[in-house]
Length: 251
Image (cartoon, rainbow, N blue to C red):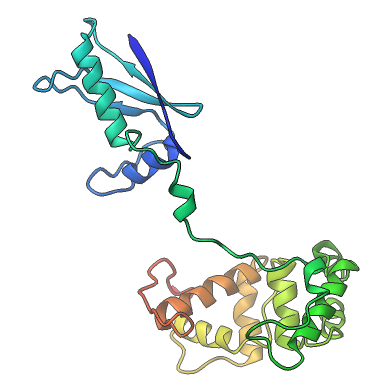
């Protein structure tokens, strides 16, 4: 068995490359992910079979043949592997053309916020207050989830600019309380109506009764239903699409 190593010029991941290939029709592969990339024999082009494995900084190719391949055959395999994985291209400059992703500022940055494009009225003041609360530990996820939900929501509503809707968002999504439904999210009722084929959005009491079937994962189901609604209507992104991954819970 002959082996050779191809070094990547720039960032490279064999698992990411094969993952793309395995999920691409008609080469779709449903076996175990992370297996070596197998190379088939080509008598016409003089290429023996082999397999490609992850190697620090690139890949290692093992050429498997009962007869030692000649230099031309090895060169053909080397060229094939390099072409398939784009290792014949200098990719060192690729990260520079990638899109910059901006993260939301940390609390220590927000405490000094005076103004920002798009923030009108008292919003900069409210953000400073929320940042100060975070630095003081008042928004700590473990602390919020350790309290009775109504108590945690009441404390969150004491923060300037945080009302009923935002308080529930902080507790359910920010602190990731897994088993609660929002009481002040109008889209949630519409999502339930759509999923359950109801003639109109259910009332709070009806939502409470329906959601009892989702315990102890009511928050998770809520998120799926909201995603389902957006997939059907596209009212936020403007791009509706068929959300087939979630059927009616009533089924």
